[in-house]
Image: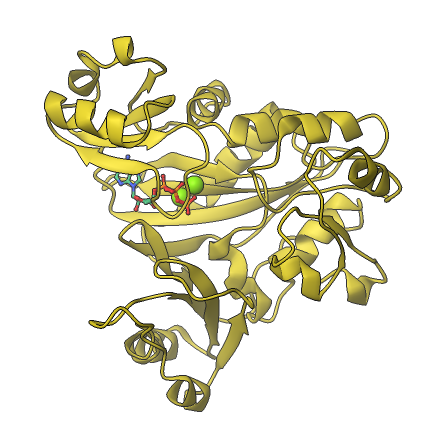
Length: 352
Ligand code: ATP
Ligand code: MG
Ligand code: MG
């Protein structure tokens, strides 16, 4: 997304096999490598597209080069407990939760969140990894041990009607722009589909934008951030979590005819003019996740049938196959919503 804008990209990424190797000047060194940080400090701006970067790496760059988002936003969004506390300070509702930093915090925690919940590690979890569903004190205690006795949050179960997401970008002058409100369906903790436009009660987009703006302003965001929401039966929105970056649910913007979230990120980070990046057409995305068949080997999508379905665009990440790993996604764009729903059902049937 940067290249067509005349922008070159330098990536600091310790994994030599990371997809970044294919499209950027790839420095493979630890995130805190002094020479790597010098190379980043030479850039016009620094951003991130992964939250498991040490806050110290951003702190070492701040003051030498604009870092968007900065260490303050990263510190909150990479730690579930700090994130929830900071969301509440910004006026957003979250799931009921209890912070479990040591074993002494366990007794009575389950009752505080309503008798059943999800135990989640405070750091490093993604795609539902580092989580366990618990409904008794004994299960909570076993799950705490299973997850490694690291700091966790225990969340109450939110009886949501649907899941939504929305990205927000904020310029250094405080101007704000929004991505589309997208509807998301998860399977076993992993995002399966995203759809634009989202279904549901009127007013959801206005409310989601209000909350996104409040978080962006309270956290002094520069750059782009994505919020995941639970929509309750009465229409109210609860923030599940945030990501300090472009998001899987925003990938449909690549093919919806408007600005892509990736270009929005580049524009926000370089302080270029930015308008909302709403798709121009109804569109959807289906994730391609590694699924093992009965013999343990990969079940592959029916690529020929996917290509034959009108309006599909395949995006693969050049990653090695592993069960449960996100390997790519297929976008679908159609002239109207009825066609979108019908073709999405056909597309989903082609992807294990
Ligand atoms: P990712 O970062 O990949 O989105 P994650 O591992 O951080 O995933 P969460 O977003 O916390 O996981 O949870 C994954 C999914 O599990 C949610 O999108 C939702 O479907 C379900 N879930 C999580 N927390 C709750 C909750 N408190 N109540 C009900 N469902 C939940
Ligand atoms: Mg997450
Ligand atoms: Mg999530």
